[in-house]
Image (cartoon, rainbow, N blue to C red; front, side, top):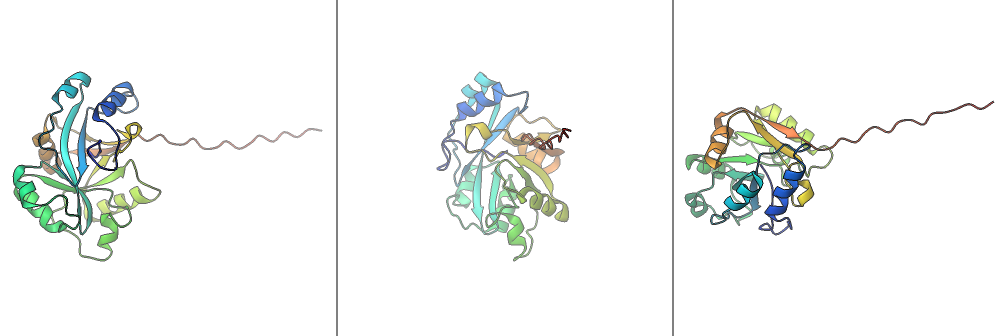
Length: 221
């Protein structure tokens, strides 16, 4: 639900490498599809069907935009939306983005809301809460200690639905967090419909560190 390929300026991960990694590690990261959410842009002309066929993994396109309430994922992007908003603008009005994208058939999901400066949690401490938020990202593969916990607290406090996303910028991070949908998702229209009306749960595939076992003391007489 949240990944960045070479098209994002801070990522060096080729899409084909992502898909190959997921295919080789399906047992530990059972992911059937990924969404490329490139920073401040939408690659309308990119066609990934050949790679989908090669690896058997669905590839969808979305965008990550920057607003006055932090970063947000935009799903179901259309030409009308990119005419209405300059996705390169790092000061987009969040409420207007949420309202207008919904009116045009898409959905906006605030990502890593527990992250300082660019997350919703911090902005809610200073400004009124946003209206018509459908869901927020509560598991983010790049989160630091405490960030996911703040995201979960925010979702529970306001009754938001929850998704997970890897926020990968490196090949090895793809699929660390994901979202399981009860309904069938075959295209971006299905994804938008499920986000708005369906049932889904965030998934966390990050390895957990095993606790350190205490040393065994042996008394020698």
